[in-house]
Length: 345
Ligand code: SIN
Image (cartoon, rainbow, N blue to C red; front, side, top):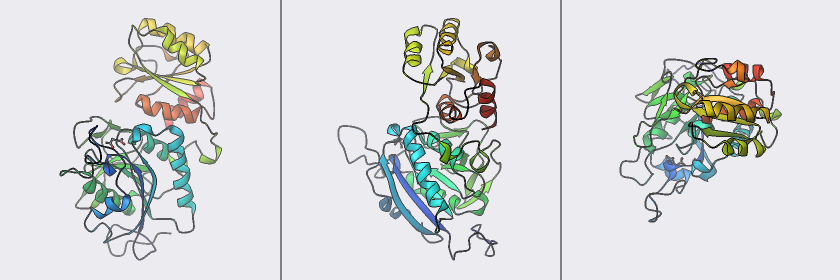
C-alpha cells in the first residue's frame, strides 16, 4: 500500500497523508498528580484526546485516529491483556482501512513486556511504536508530549517499516526485544543492552541498527495458534537462603515453567541448584536468567545447563524470558527446541 516518498518527507503512503492510529492504554502519560491526594498520582486518567491536544502541530503532517483500549496502570496488565491488545491491533492491521502506523501509549513499568509481546506476535511491516512518560500529564515538566510527538513521527516514517515493535522514549528509538526500564528516577528511563536502533532528530527517524532476531512475520509464533490461557510461568529472584518451599509452591501451582533470576550472569547458588533440580523432576521447565535484568547469561557458563536440563535465557531479562517461555511452551517442552527458540527470538 506504499508508494515512493516523492516529497522527501520520510513519509511513504498512497494516501495524501499517512494515517496514524493512537491506541491509548493508560500509564503515567495519561496520569494525573492532581486527581488524588492519597498517593503520588493516578495512571490512566486523561483521555487520548487530552494527550494529543497537548502536542502542538501533532496532526499537521498525519491524519490521526484515536482509541482507548485500556485505561490502566501497566503494573496491572497481565500476559493475557497483552495478547488481547496484540489480537486487537492485528485485526486493525488486517482491516480494509488499516493505518500506516500505530502508536500505543502505555505505562512505563511494564512497557517492555507489552513491546516484546507485540514484537513477537504482530504479523506486519507497519511500524508499531510504544511510548509513555515518567511524569504525569498535569506535571509542569511533563515528558509525555515530546515522547508522543516523537512516537508519531517514527510511526509515520517509512524507515521504521520492518523494524518490528519499537519503544520511542527520550529521543531514542529502542528495539522491543532489548529495551528495558533501567531506572524509576530519570526521564531517560529506558536502555538497550546493545544500544538503541536509532534516534529522533528534528522530528525525523535516524536508523542505526536493525533487530537481529526473529519477530513478527518471521517469528515462530502466530496469534491464531495461541491457546487461552497461555501456559503459566513464574519468576523467582533467588539467593542462597531461599526457602525450598517457595520453589515447591511454584511446582505445585500448576505453572509449566519457572524463570530463575540468579546473581551476575544468572548464577545459581548450591542450595538453589538442588531446589531447581527437584522442581524440574516435578515437571517444571526451568529457564536460567540474570537477576540483573540486563544480562547476559551464557549457556553452560559457570554452571552446566546441559547437566541440569535447563534453558539459558541469554540476554533476555527475567520478565522477557517469562513472555518467551509462555509462548514457546505452546509449541514444545523439549529443552533443545526451547533453547533454539530462545537463541533465535
Ligand atoms: C504505569 O506503568 O502505568 C505507571 C508508571 C508509568 O507509566 O511510568
